[in-house]
Length: 180
Image 1 (tube, rainbow, N blue to C red):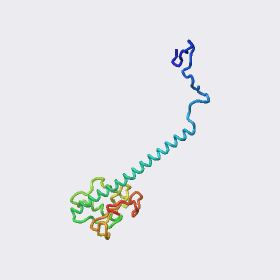
Image 2: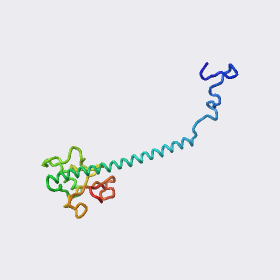
Image 3: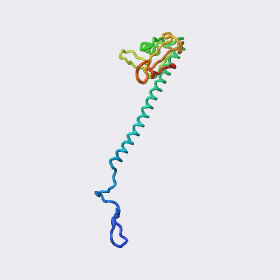
Image 4: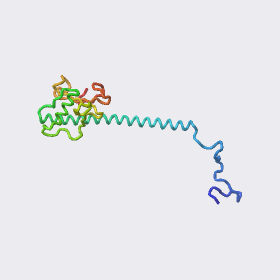
């Protein structure tokens, strides 16, 4: 006897195991309707949008935090330089100040190294051959010695400024070592 057949209660006859179910090709077969499929696809689309939005926000937060860490590393190197030389490295601000800072911190005449390996990161951002300290987005970090700006904040120290995610200096998303 095959597994799909059973003896009937009336004796000897056979009943199909699928009794009561529609046979394939019949009008009432179980399947998903187009509306059900579209609802499932739209739910999956909404979930993917939420997940990608969360990943994007987390990535943006990581990039900003990484740049703040880079500013802290540069600040520690500048403080060591100030301890050894009695003043902060020269820097007139902007891109020129960035190049001056890099040269001062990496000079072979220094009594000790102020940067190590690739931290804080440096690159030639404008193709001029001059390396500068860069943020997470590979934009130059502007450096200004306290003699080159007037007044508060930190009138006796220095300023470090990253252009932030938009790459434009002087906008709201700039990342600095002082409170704006």
